[in-house]
Image 1 (spheres, helix red, strand yellow):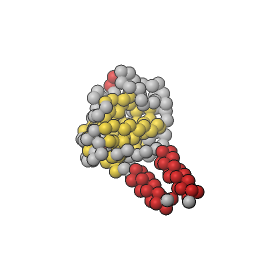
Image 2 (cartoon, helix red, strand yellow):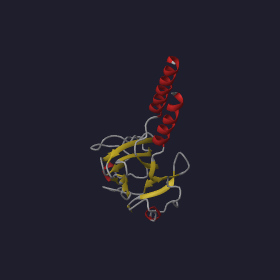
Image 3 (cartoon, one colour):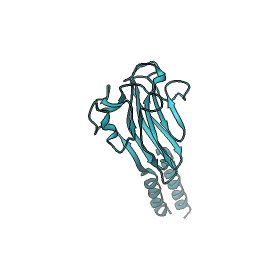
Image 4 (spheres, one colour):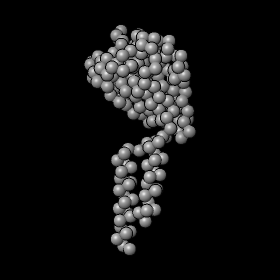
Length: 194
C-alpha cells in the first residue's frame, strides 16, 4: 500500500509547489536613477515617480520614488491567471520609522493597502525589509506601487523589491508534511494488519 501511496504524495507535492510564475521583478536589470528605463520594460505600463536606486540596507537595486503622487506612481499591465487565483508577494522597506513613509500597494481586485489611514494598515515602516503575501481571486490583476502624496511632502523613504505573482495556490510546507505523514501512517497501519 505504501508503494502505491508514495507516488501520489510525490505527484501532489510536485504539482502544488510548482505554481506558474506570471510576473516577476527585482529591479536589477535597470539603470540606477533612470526613471524612463522602467517603462521601457514590458513589466510596467506607466511610471510617474518610480526610480531605481541602490537598496539602502541590502546593497542590491530596489524601487523607490523621486516624488509623491496620488493614484499611482508605477503600474503593471494586466496579469492573467488560468486558475483564477493570484499569489502576490513583495518586499517593502519603510525607512522613516514613523509609520508614515507613504508606501502603498494596490491590486485591482481588492484595492489599496498602505502605511497610513484611511487605507488598511498593512505595510510596516520599521527600517527593515518585510515580505508581504496576498492571495486574490479573479481572471486578471494589475499592480500599483506608490509613495502617496497624502502622506506628506517627503519621498525616497518607501522602497519595494522582489515582486512575484504566481498562478494558483501553493500550500504551506507544514500542510504538505502533514499530508505525507498521514499517507505514511496509513501505509504502516495497512502493513501491520497484513
